[in-house]
Image (tube, rainbow over all chains, first blue to last red; front, side, top):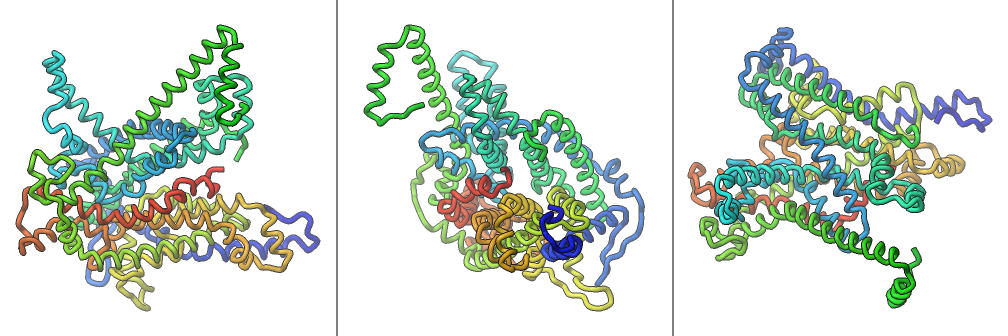
Length: 308
Length: 330
């Protein structure tokens, strides 16, 4: 990338010319990023440290230091709770999503009849699963009158599981059973629908396992189990990290999750821009810290074939 | 594993079995059994999970074609008792489908296209050129991927509201197409960081000989890009374009921030309840039995994703196979 060693012209001026072209290619992005990303980013930080009010034609900002942050953490009744809830939910959802998508990717990578159809179906959630449609599908209580995957319960019109249990002779189990099954059903739904892109990434990663490794394993007589852990897993591990980051970010920035909703509340209804900015930044810092910590841990387990 | 023609295989197998030792025979039987078991198990899993995915869609389709009365009819589970197309018509009316679709298409397809082009340019710049501060600038790209949109939406809103240089001019851009097009043209649209990354990885993966050949023939870098790199990159372009369409189509958050009067399909879904009541009963405040309302809600969902589904059925290969080909991963 640095310098054409075989050129006879003076290296410096050719290189510099090429550099200028480089800048040229990214010039559009540079302008855009400055205008639409960096400046708003800076302003957002500024907002979080001030109390913002709108006057006709301009915005008024009064510096209040850490007040907004303090309010978010101590005085707002729901913020810290919601933060905790969301964090915990992401904590157990992410590994599940990763494991699930890896498993499905391995399955979808095998050759079998109808594989194209299976891949098409599993990727469907990516096409649909954003915004209002997803909310309606996953059954917001206000949109369907049911909660979550209780939509499935239109199939179990009566307490089917409970009846089954009772028929089999377990009496007191039925309530716990139904609620357990409902929770599982709920989560299966959520996990399956959030895994679309992860499955895709893992699939692509699996396709990139060098055939030489695969042949070597076959020659040595590796069982499928061994094959998975000794070959597939190490080759896929860099993508576990990437996928994990993607999953966490996806779930954290999902506008439908609780914390986001609260932030939106302050932004749109109460017009307290300073507070909402502070909340957002606090949230983001926590997310970044979480990702950083997880990444550091995972990095130790990654097998890099080449030092990319 | 030597693979003979079909009829030979069985013969070969039988002959082999006959001459095999007892241990060999039992091993073969065991592995065959394990394979069968796995095939069955795999089918079960795929079918079961496929069901979880398809169920909402089937439910949507089923609801769309039934009258609202059917919802409270306990004998109706999947097949409507009174199949009707009126729900579809009513919903399309309420959504102002023609207008909304037009808005969405202009916004969506246009922005997606523009964004793909600008991201490709940027990606190429990062891939093939070295210049001062490249690492830092690419770090900003990564930052763009990581930082959630919500962080910058607010200031962005003000940016558009009072767009201009202080003291020189100021225009209110909210509710115009520019709020979407300007960022898209400058590679800052929805998920643009990701696209830049994809393009960079892709261009890195192309052989240098292509460019060298072009340079020798006297092409400048820009012409090289247009004449040589782009034609080679068409599959990647298509895939990114499709993904971009999907993201823009499903986008709700950014759209509501910047558009208060123009409707897109996604924003429409939220106001549907009152619209439906308005159309049906002439009064937006009448609350219907929530179960009955489901029919229209599901119909609206179905209608809003149908264009995407159609596109998906025909171009599905580009979605699922596209990522591998784009070289993001290899």
